[in-house]
Length: 176
Image (tube, rainbow, N blue to C red; front, side, top):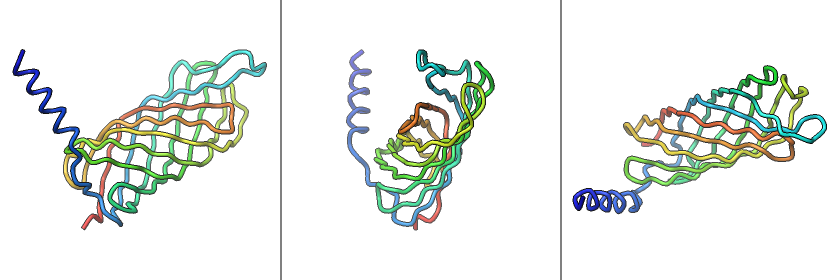
């Protein structure tokens, strides 16, 4: 019991000490992700909230480092939904990522603005402005590769809110 407590304390201290950020200006990365997706939107009478029975999403993104911790990012996320009719959405955003290097695990948060296109099921075909917030944790496998979990929430001046969560894989280059 005592060894477990000491090991947990050592791990907590190691994770709390920030490492030196290894990203640099000009570093580039491409990511792909896949996972779960859902939405929430009011019905025609604005009396109930509609959401799908099931949904899935795929996304691709490009990043370019502006410095050690900050990058700009462009993303495209495409999702399909079942239940209440087949529906789909596409979200394109550009924004900033703030990354905190902590040993092997790299947590990050991001924010982006763009457009959400949706149609089918309870949706009329249309395009709306969107604000996306997200975050995740990358697990470094090497200087050029990482994988991790990612989650995004999108809403703004629209009645539709989308959420996705999944696994992400990233390839980096240009860090020298």
